[in-house]
Length: 220
Image 1 (cartoon, rainbow, N blue to C red):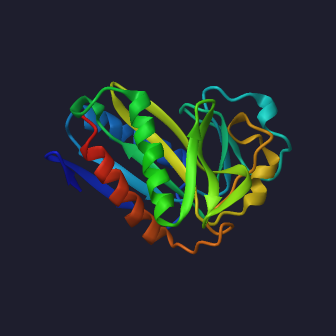
Image 2: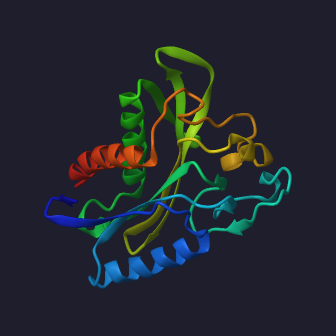
């Protein structure tokens, strides 16, 4: 992928990736990007069942402990779930080459998801006091209450981003019942499958990349 004369490497993992391995990989890659030994990277993957807690997580966000690991994560945000059927996109992007604006970069990630969902005839939005992307209409029908379909959590090192977003294609949504996802207890999560949309990981990767590339081109 080449935008504005910057080449970004793409990585697609078809097998579930261990979360701790992924974090170590990202940390090493960020250091190599900073020393100009490696290219920027967008990594599409799934994780095995795991709950991760970000920098602002609280203990009461775990409602019930089940046989799923709980790990402290070195990203922003609160408690979230990862597992099979959820696509994770890790963005190792050098903002030194672009605009040094973290809030705007997060908005870019959010708008990429909103535009992608629109192509599936799903209307979504963001809220100032709630991180992530929320579905409000599906195929023209307004939901009784907005539902979360994507979570975002980033970390920055010397203006190189890592971590990224998780998007619910077809995970087992019951795993969200045991946590206050992103610190919220009065909202539910949803997925493309629950909304009646059948999309493979490969198709999601392609569709997400198309929208993200377009948005990143204008991020300067």
